[in-house]
Image 1 (cartoon, one colour):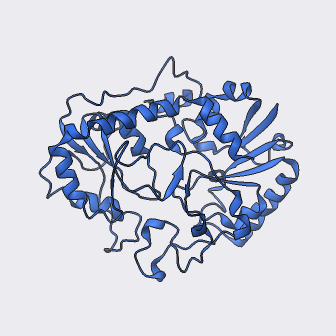
Image 2 (cartoon, rainbow, N blue to C red):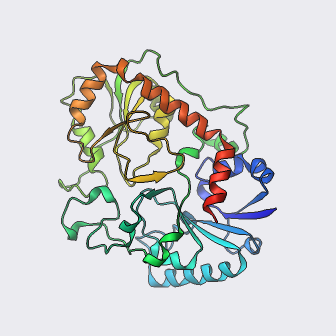
Image 3 (cartoon, rainbow, N blue to C red):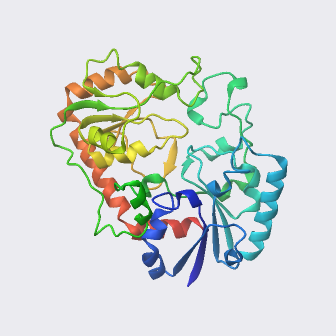
Length: 359
């Protein structure tokens, strides 16, 4: 029996990125992996683990936030990592960044495993000077002085970058705010994920809510793709559920009543909307994902989602065609939903994959 200790992100420990570790705690134990959760980095109980996994967002108030990062809190974090590495068999840094890029490479030499929610297929990209590559690979279309910089990964440390898991394992069941604390403990047999039948009648062609953010026409802004999507709505002759924020209940109701759902890149490539779309039985439309690896891999071109180029230039015509020929795309919604449902209920595959990637 080996022990995995997790320093979790306290504010998101319910229904968040470690949800499946709580959910499958007994399953993990059956595979000789005992999981313990901690919420204070100074807790002496964290010492002496076979595996110690540190959720990067635990440090979001200090070094992990690039806006508050300093030489002082970097030195403090490195000292902490050095100390904990002496007490753990394997020290694992779970980089919870939204994108396939990373700003956490300055600490990679102080850990044994550097796990990412999504990893670039071309690992060499991580080693190239930030004068060439943007942190977010899809934004490499503008001049160097506008790039989001990152510290490259030393080539000798590349082997540490392992595939972790994405937010597909989060808990997407509907909870009221006060009920959310039951997330990690309420059995899926008692309260399962509610899937909408993909082939039911749908009143909307498209559901996409949001507001345009000012970006001065700069394609390197996080909001560029979302702004582009929103800018099309006045020209499209479609039934669209759009506008500003609405209640959670209304958001789900609209998505479940929509034929199509767009999920552009933002801070990262993978978004909650991806999995909400699978649950809702809508057809997912998304910028090409063939540059990365992720687990579970639910992004298969023209099988579980309809791809568009990163510049979204063909999106308007694609939306009009798909809405007019919706029956030709229903199978994609069906495939996406079935693969999602299988993945989030397959503890055996997750445990096998996770154990392989922490060694």
